[in-house]
Image (cartoon, rainbow, N blue to C red; front, top):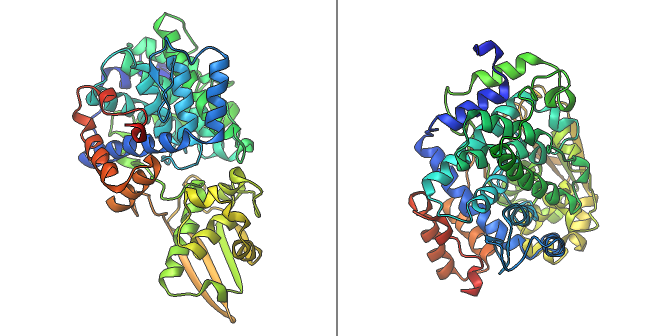
Length: 460
């Protein structure tokens, strides 16, 4: 078969199934941190209502039972692999605290790690194998993301649930040792599970969509392993995924696929970690609020607060005065006010319904949101068109431009910030949290990752 007739999914599948992906030292550091970060997110999220209700539904369906082996973290429950991965993904995404990546616009680690852990529940999982599976999923998500975004996301598709399902199929296929043809079929089958809507944001269906994607990707890999097939042209076909859910520019697909094998996608894009439990598109503005505070500005003296950001980002954040926790995670005025007035936004603030505080509500009333038309809409974050915060006090303006959010590769969180987040998410005191943190830091060289990840640290 000539290169001209090899489809996009086949090119991805051949690469991730046959090639050892060797990222740089810095990229491996991102992957190492990602597992520890999402593990903490799964632990704290397991107690959220959406996670509890998901587990109850899985119990009712018989998928959580005493004979199952896959772990649901933050609980004492075991389930079938697909159900456990779904439950862990829902928990990990319940508070919008998990990491994400730029080209696919997906919450990548809460997709890939729950799938990798659950799919290997009946055997030892070495750190080396976990990394290989993660990188296979990352490469798949990034390259498909380059081919379809940002039109795909801007049209209202929840990329974590759509592209993510295919990425999970890639990770699990690599973990299972499927060959190129089987992997291509797994990816093709997964396109039929690629569904999720941004219109669900602010509701419990949002994390549930991530759970569906993880479960669907695992099933797709297992179906392909039996010999079940799908159409390998599902990306570039005139009625395929990209044409129906993105755009009809075939050259974009070829450009993205041509990057396969040149350098690992993770070396180019890395991972964006979250210092706050809210939608990532609030984080540039929230970073700007920290800058305002560092200048000694008295929030009580502010007469007007203007927030400027790209129209696509603003469209994901429709809630002004949130009525519940789900809306608060997607309320730019609330998230900005919380950091400006409190210096932070924490899970405790959400538990205490901080959006109802009178000073928060007053600051929201002083806030306007202005949407900008992107000059380069293909970029998720354009440093030449940063978010902007303008605070007016007694007629004088104080402006802050924010090209990148805290937690991005360009403006990384400190180790102390990562450690503090991990401690709060695990619910442990400082010393045991540090001990667990350091033990988990050895996971890339572990013989069996399952031995390192305890189901409920507070119970030990």
